[in-house]
Length: 237
Length: 184
Length: 84
Image 1 (spheres, one colour):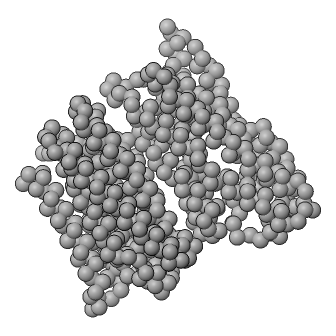
Image 2 (tube, chains in turn red, green, cyan):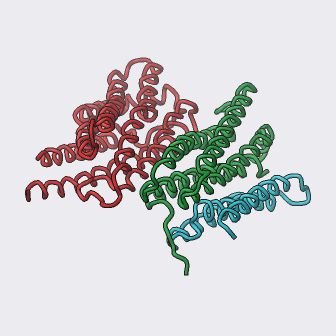
Image 3 (cartoon, chains in turn blue, orange, yellow):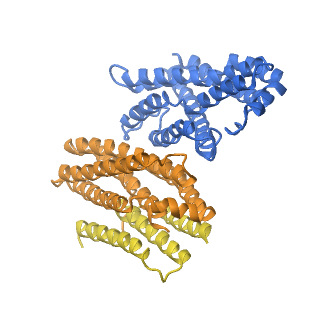
């Protein structure tokens, strides 16, 4: 009977994610991420020139950057609905999902800090900037937990007959394996400051973030569709 | 008219096509680097251990054969499946050992991720491939266990999917081997 | 031909192609571009065998087979094209 609440949570995630994205692009103005080869002076100048806008962006992100939390709760509950017995994998999903959100919260926070005192030494601002960038792209540690949990539960479902109320079609498991492999590459950003493996590179930023966010979108849509079906069954019963 | 049948299940092909897409970007990147800096590329290539890489290629090709034979036997419910998967696992483990040795060899010689564009791509792409080999070994262990159980249609389908993933690992190495070690 | 026999023959072909590819390196009569083209084509031919016979796409629905054959062809063309 909690379908309505779950639907609200998914929409909460979607709206917060959109607002977060807009704050990042238009207020913080770090989309795309700048090259890792910029000097301390260049970085400090960016934060000084955009100080107010960035701090406003950090403010907005303070309200929206933890958008993964509600979605993780709903996905865990939907997985638990399918998991027989003790919900081991569903809990793993829950833990991984909500902990991942921390690493989306930290970068805007740090960008706000970087912009907070334009008069500080440039090298100090550079450190905060690097901290923010590397946190943004390398922190894939919790992804594995929730992606594997989703893969396991989804593949355990019987093919025939298919559960019409399940939000997780079998192809989602395979798609998730692909997304997991792509996003884990992000950790390599520590190893170089230029080229496609640097923090704004093709393999560290564009592919993982593009594909990762698309995957979240797919998940949100599947959940909403399934919740609608579940609600119809609950109402009809 | 032959019956056309989708190997495994449709989802595995989502993964395969996705991986082929990403690795194609890797492959084109290597080719473009070769074209853009031919002297540096050939110099760096000459320091690679080609005999070991050849051994690795032969190991993966053999492991793929073993897996293909094993999957056939699972479908026909014949014996020898466990032995074939064991051969594949042994070959795959050999690959991991040899690759690790290659990396160690390079590292003690002072060659690292940042040494040149060639080596950035070499370590990154063969490293990502190695991660796939390790994942594939896990899959092979799971397939060995699954093959001991009752061959329900769903289980046979999953075993086929696992085999298909292993063949992907083999196929990706074939191209990496050609681009990094052979094409000169 | 039994499936087992067929798979073993294909494996032998794969090994042969591998060794031939490496062998071309020692042939100084071939220019660098044709040699590169040969190595790439040989590699993709090996890939084709793995896809069609090990992954069993040869008897898969046409859509999948055509898609994968097209990928093999395009990759081959792009890799050789980039180099020439």
